[in-house]
Structures are given as C-alpha cells and as structure tokens.
Image (cartoon, rainbow, N blue to C red; front, side):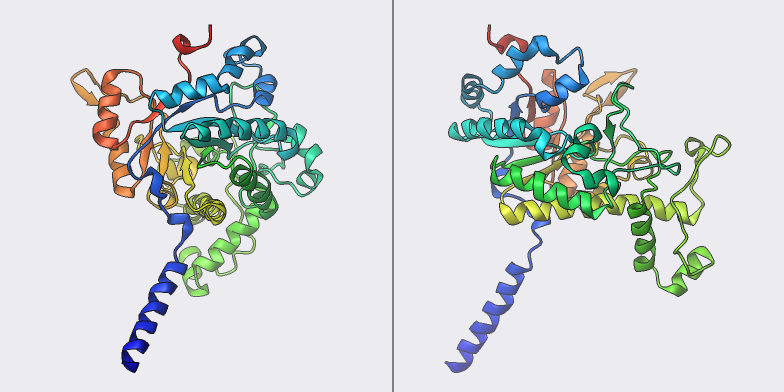
Length: 393
C-alpha cells in the first residue's frame, strides 16, 4: 500500500510537470478545432482611413463604415451563421493615438459576444507611424525603434508610393517589442477580450532593404555566436570573431535583385536569422497573449506556397513559423480554374495547412472557390466584409 502511494505520487508529479511545461505558444484553442466562418467590418481604423485618404475608404463613406459596427449588422451576421466577427484594433499609430478606436473595437466586440460570436481583432505587425508614435513615445525616436538602412534612413512600407509615414518597426529591438506586447496585445486581450489575433503584414522587407538598426546588428552577431562554437565558426566563415559582421550592403553594381544562388555564408546566415527573428518574436507574442487567455487563436499572413523563395524574400520559414499559428492568410489569386489546359488552385496551401495543423484563410468569390476551400481546408474560413447588397439603405 505504501509503495502504491509512492508510485501514484511519482506519476502525479511527472504528469503534472508535463502539464506545466506545456508551451502555450504551440497551443491549439479548443473552440476553433472544428472550423469557423469569419466575416465583418474593415480591418482599418478610421484614423488610418483619414491619414491614407484612399478613394475606396474616404470621408464620404463614413455612414457605411459605421454601419458595419452597428448591432443591427452584427446581429445579422450571427443569424446568418457567422461564428467569428472581424474588427479593426491597431494599425501602428501608437497606443494613445489609437485608444479611441481601440475602445470602439472593444464596444463592438462586446456586441458580437452578446450574439454568441467570437471576435477576431486586426493588429498591424509591420507599421510604425512615426508622426504620432514619436509624440506618444518619445524614446521610440531617441532609441530608434524602427528599421534603418545602411545610411541610417528609415525603411518604409511601399503601399501606393504615398505612405511614407509608415516606417517598419525593428523586430530585434526589445524596447519596441515590449511596448507592443504590454500596451497593444495586453489591451486587445484584457479590454477588447479578443478571441482571435490577426497579425497583418507579417513579413520582413525585401533583402534590398536590410535592417542596420544597432539592435538588429547586435542580435545578428549574438545569433551567430549562439548557433556556432568557435571551431564551427572557423569552419563556416574562416574566422571566429563575428563581432564586426554586418547585414548585407548593396549598391548599383551589386544589387540584391540580381542574386540567383546565395553562396556567401554570412548572407545565408542572415537569411536564416531573419526567419528566426520573425518566428521567435511571433512565439513570444503568442505565449504572452495566451498567458492572459489560453484560448486565443493566433493568425498571420505570411502567404502560402506561391512558388518563390519566401525565406529569402521575406524572412518566412513556413514549417517553423506555423508551429505558433492556428490560421494563416494567403492573399494570392490562384483560385481554382482551368487555364490553357492547366489546373490552377490553392491545394498546395491547403496541404501546407493540413500538414502543420493550421486552417488557411483565402479570398473566395465564386462557388468553386468555396468548394475547394471546404473540401481541402476543413472549414469555411473567410467570408469577407459587408457586401453592397446588405448595406443599410
């Protein structure tokens, strides 16, 4: 009897330690395991609509914009079978600048929860709107929380050639990432009570825009030191001291776009380092969110298998990254069809999702798009925003 109790105690301790050792970043929330149908409002807060001044979303469309946040619209979605309501939350202007919009998202989320839906909040990953961010967080300007090139100029997003107010944040800067978790993700979980976080623009810049932020350089050097012993570094690079290694630099005679085969070992490691950075930071954010609410779904938009070298182009290593996601977006337009005797479709994306235990979100328009999605994705996934025919007249 005594030994039986000892054995039971040991089994309890071992199994208990296994439970406590669970990595929340890799957790798959219970509520999404049987699929979902996601639809709702735009992912753009009004502050961005006004600052961007895009013809698709301008001041003259405010009534239609507000209608998507109304109880009437949300109730209609719920009655139509939508299980997840999509709403804007954070675009990169800084917490203080966007608090009014985030609180509006919280109010709208409460309405969606009232009608039994989960809430999917849009959180921009790759935008640092310096005009307001510097005012909100002065140290972000002083300590350079954004990416810079070799000439110390900010690295920008390239939307429409008229959005130079959107710097790219430095993902290797602990100050920025701590702010992002504590101020943005925490508010989404605790205030909005989100069930689903969509990290948008989840990628790195093209290699021609290599980040030379001091934090990124220091992180790259530490990555090499941690990855290789001195003997291995000697074999890999022909020297052991990596304290002067820099990210790649390009010029007109040596442009990044002309590389076909990557022979340079430092350039190979820099490519891996970028993938490691995005994967590590995503895991960190997922773990942080799930310590606040274990049942939060994590989603990004790294795109799927589109036939290009995503590790080189954007720092994306799908198998590694998708350990920490439950859903990914792919925004290509390879919808199912026959074209010149060739079958085109998104089956590779869906196979990637099945292999990594992820659902795939993709644009659907025609009946065959939904048919392929349902057959291979195990879920309806993304339905879309409000159609014109359902807008308030």
